[in-house]
Length: 148
Image (tube, rainbow, N blue to C red):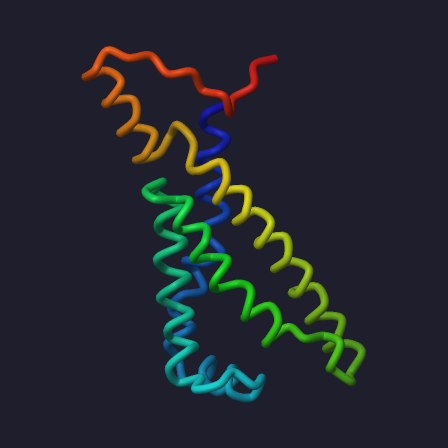
């Protein structure tokens, strides 16, 4: 079961890591400006950096809780500023943005779960905890795993 958390982190972080390069293109910056992003030339690339740091943190499981909060910091404004489907007159375009809006809400929910539960045992943090226990000869009880 430990592998499930690792696979989940890989799949979850992929959506952010794959999107990073686009945040540095003129097209994405112009699109952000057209959607009302203030100082898009600064904030769109900054959003890419935040997505990169958060995605990498979650992927490798190092400071994943903090990385998840970076993803929240990335997703909250993007969701509201770019996918404002309620302001779009064209029904087809509004429907596409509504799907992206709801998808981002789901991604926000997952980020909040990671911010609470952390990266799991198959991560750099999990490895460091195991190593510390081995060095000090202590045994910790994992309250987050449930055996059935």
